Amino acid sequence: MYKNEVPLSEQRNLRPTVLSARIKKLADEGKLEDAIQVVLDAPKNKLNVIVWNTLLSFLMKAEKRNRAYSIYIEMKRRNFTPMVSTYNTMLTGMSEIEDWTTNIVQLEHCHSLYESYRSYMEVCKEKKLKSELHHGPAIFYLRILRKANLFQKLLDTFYSMDETGPLAPDKYIYSALFQNLSYRQTTDKIGNLTVTEQNASDAKFLWRKLEKDFQRNNLEVDNFVVVHVLRLLMNGRSTDQQFGLDIVRDYFGFAPPGEDAPPPRLNFEFRSFRATLELCTKAKKPRLCAYFAKQVMDLRRAGSPRVRELELNHYHMEEVLLSLNSLAAVGSLDESARAVEMLLWMQREAALQRVGVRGQQQPKEMGLQPSTNTYALALAVCWRCVDWARACEVYTLATQLAAEEFVDGGPSAEIKKQEQVPTRKSELLNIQASAYLARTALATDDRARMRQCLRMMLSVHDVRSFYERGNTEAFFLFFKAKLASAVVKMINLSTEGATEDERFVLRELKKRSQEVLVKRVSYERLPSQEEGALGSQSYMEKMQQAIDFELAAR
View (cartoon, helix red, strand yellow):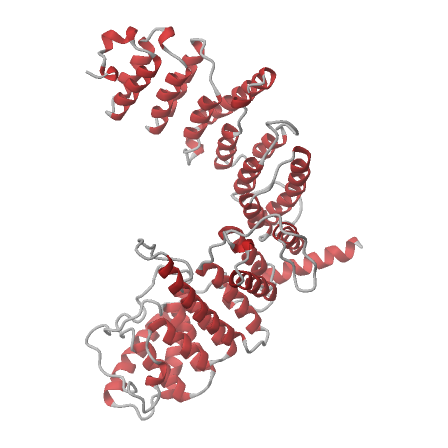
């Protein structure tokens, strides 16, 4: 019989370490009540805080939070002083609760736990117990306040923290603060700011406090803090977004063309670079987005240590494609060529990445391999530029089918009756991509290209499944209606000289397209790539308000 299998009748002979092992064994067997009884029946000299913590940990894992709190109270009643690990265990378990409207009593328990933790920290400071001075419980308490929608108390808790010393807010507290603030959906602030604008305004104020605190306490900012604050600032007003770009300049050393940047304090990582590109997009600065991306790609080719830890991903490149789309919307006609060049570069880099991890299991969405959304965004740029030739190149890259085969008189120029899904079906040409491909062909006003487009789409998706793919995509119904509208117009304009089989297939496709149009719905918000070059109407109104405010303040 092992030590941790001693019968309950012999508990008085157990040492605390063996008692902890006994509790673990009983908990693993689902006998939590027996584990509780072991602790309650054990003599005080056989117990210590670690034993109590072990029991509390298993109770929290089993989501028996009320029972855990009663054991915590019993522990204190028996004159065992909770350690920082005790408060960490308790508040970590409490932070897993999602709906606090039905857990009011437990919320009061959380407030009590945090106040006890603060009192314990004061004792530890007096006794100079450095190993016990830890922010962990405070971070989980902030999360609880966020989930309980107590944002004012969250801010009050933060402001009540020490300004100096080991318990002054560090990068972990600030990261938690910014991250939790992004969940705020209502605000009592006076003024005409939306909640996201108020969040950005608060983030700007808190960032200035962070810089003073970190300078005073000799602390360093890291990527995680910057990511969370940029995500708040990007959804604010133009002044907030510019403040975010100033942070990018000051900490990463990336500035707009013609502006001097200081030496970088941080190097870009995956999330911080993505947040920077998204900030440029939200700030309506597409050229700056493309410029930053080019800088990073140049540094990457040069083997610079500044981007050594940055793992580029198709998500980064999709932000750049959005910027190219915005540039094309204001009349720049060479953006479609840049979009195709980017796709070719991504495919080459993805191939090199696969070689670099040969023999390892690769995730489905790895690195720079273009996704369905990547090809769709590239086709959106071609639509903006009315560039059918580049759209055909994107189609070929996505499907591995030569677009020129589908021109009039080409090897695949005839549409035949389809008894089943084409064998060369491509999942990379989704509804969104097909809509942009069709709208590009329609915009050229060239009937031969319209016929070519219809053949290209029917070569990878049969009539029956034409509108049934990708129904989980964002704005699926919007693009479905756009595709159906373009298909109906192309069929009406370009079916002269069609064979009987072609007419049969196109009649069926037109019928299904008209059914889609009958069921279409209106949208309050458009996809970002569909908005005007300067943004949505609501954005323009907010911009005008900001301009009026600036002029009035002068």
